[in-house]
Length: 287
Image (cartoon, rainbow, N blue to C red; front, top):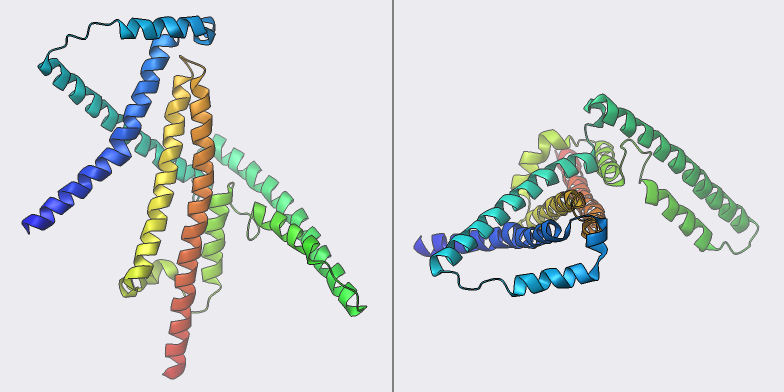
């Protein structure tokens, strides 16, 4: 039991350090830079000003007592952890906006914006779907005449469709529609009521499948937390405009990771649901 508690404590400390402290230290360093250099656009653009400030830091008194160093380190760790918790809280909001499962219950301004976005995505998806169907019909007609049907046009048209959504859009974001497509796919399976059957299904899963789904969901949470960090970096732009670079890079990376994680998670859950439905049908046929 002692070894188990020791191992668990070590893993928790590693996760605390990796997920909260290290990103928080990086953010605090950026915030300190913004506070020191963010004295107007002219100063932030000035290389001379930057060099001067670095010189000031280098000449700062180094004679700090051990007790003072410990207090400073504790303050940095506490501030980093608090910043990390703030990023996680913002990540929850980013996840809610990215998946947009309940967008119809959002406040009126956001709901109207989401409704407009859904309409625009449906228009784009309908056009792309029509182009794909036209490409398929052209290929079928060519085959009836014994001519070669180049598949590249159909593939390109299909990629344009799924670049918008797998099925007709119902949510304002790609990731949200990916989860919606998974829900609709499982509803189409006879005998599957995933929300009701999921606890039983989850208990009966093999360890490998459960691990894969858990890791995919964790990856989605981390991706949305990265989006929370992007929001925090955006705040620094108020004092120091170069922080927009860090915010933009973080936001673009978060967007890519959210899409990838949502796609992987939806694919795994759909696969488990299909297998569960097939097993239920086989069990019913055997009985």
